[in-house]
Structure formats: C-alpha cells, structure tokens
Length: 284
Ligand SMILES: [Zn+2]
Image 1 (cartoon, protein in one colour):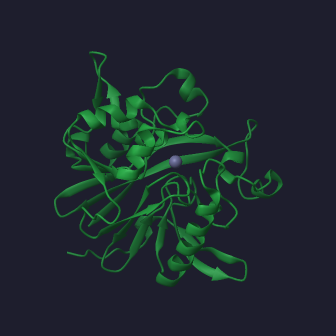
Image 2: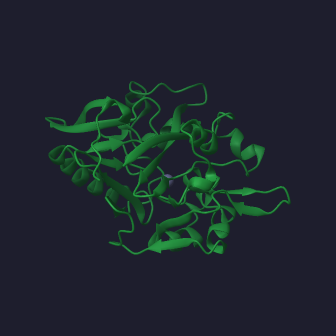
C-alpha cells in the first residue's frame, strides 16, 4: 500500500465558522485570523494505491463555479487536484475509485467540470464513485441551513455516469480500509480507517477537520447536530488514544497528521508530523 497526501485547495474560512461556540479571544491564540476574520485552511486529499486500485479520497472545490463563489473562499488559483496528482506521477485517467467523505462543495466540486462544449462531465473518466447512501439522499434533498453547500451540478453528473455506488452502513468495498459513518457534521459522513501492517491512519474529513478542533467544544458551527458531533468525537478520541491511531487532517494547513494522548484536560495531540516522516509497512 502506498499513500500520497495531495493538496486540492489552499483557501480561507471564517474563524467563527471553524470553531463554533468558542470565543475568538480563545481560538485566536491558536490560529491567527486575517483582516476578514478568516483563517487559512487547506483541502488535503489522499491517494491510496493498493492491490491494483488507485483510490482518491475527496477532490476539492474544482473550477466550474462563478468568480463570486471563489472570491469569498480566497482560494489560491494555482493549486488543484490534477496538478497535485501530476506531481506524484499520475493523471485523472489513472484513478480507479473516488471515495467522497461527503458531498459538501469543498469535497466534491472538482469531480465534475464544464468541457469545451459547455457540458458538465466527470473529471475522472474511469473512476467508480463512492458515497454513503444516507448522505446521497440527504444531499439531493437538502435542508435550508445546509443547502448552500450542496450543488446539483456537483452531483447529477456523478449519478448520470452510471459509476456511482451508494454504500449502506457496514459495506466495505476496499481491502484494508474500513469505512465508518458519522452523523454530527452532516448525515452519513464516511470516515475511512486505513490499515497498513503497522499503523492505522484515519482520514478525518470534516469530523475533526484540524488539529485545533481536537478539544471537545471546538466543533465547527456548520455541524448540523453539534451534540451528536460531541459524543462521536469524545468516543473516537478515546479509541484513537488507546489504539495509537494516526489522525490525517484534511483541512489543517500546518499539521498533516497527529497522534492522540489522554491528559488531565482530555484528549490532546501527542505530536504532529507528516505522513512521509513515519515508516509504513506494507500489508501485502
Ligand atoms: Zn463538510
């Protein structure tokens, strides 16, 4: 098994959105806000090469939306998933599977683009697409609070491709990867646990988007059920400390990975590091 972290976007998010009920006087000690009260975030995808498959987890914002859309996200224009794939020697045609943690626009947008004829098409022509059944249903019929993150043009081409697979809870289509569902951030978010023979790497998605979100109350304000997030997070962090999981952060600019220990204050980061700084034994 080979793992390649790939940056799809570097962008900014309102600090209040990122930390929910935590006052700025506290979160700003950890994370500096700019003049718009925004903090820098990234979208770090993960390419898993295993047993002949090239599985990409999440893909980023993409480039098919309006200028106004990108202006409020303060996105760097020279970063995208295809460029990052190219930097490790692969192209869109190579990808056999795209696994979406969920279908909020910053996770799924780049999976489709507008082609030369002005039509929507899938960016990865040979890929099978995977998302949870409960989340697909949720995304197609969004509530008014969460609706701004779901775009029909991000979703319909996937459905029309004939290559979209909707996963029931407990279904495990990938070898050495367990898919779990969590419901606090959105309904049916997939969190993959990836097993090499010596480590378990957890792709954190929007479950715990950055290392700064580890303290229990630091739950983003966009979570649809923060009290569910709280319980899910507390249970997961206990398990992560006991089992020495490596947490791989999708949105943390500075901290790619960390391990967890329990302290008097609860779960805290033990140390942060990049995935390529640790030895991963192959499970073949
Ligand atoms: Zn999300």
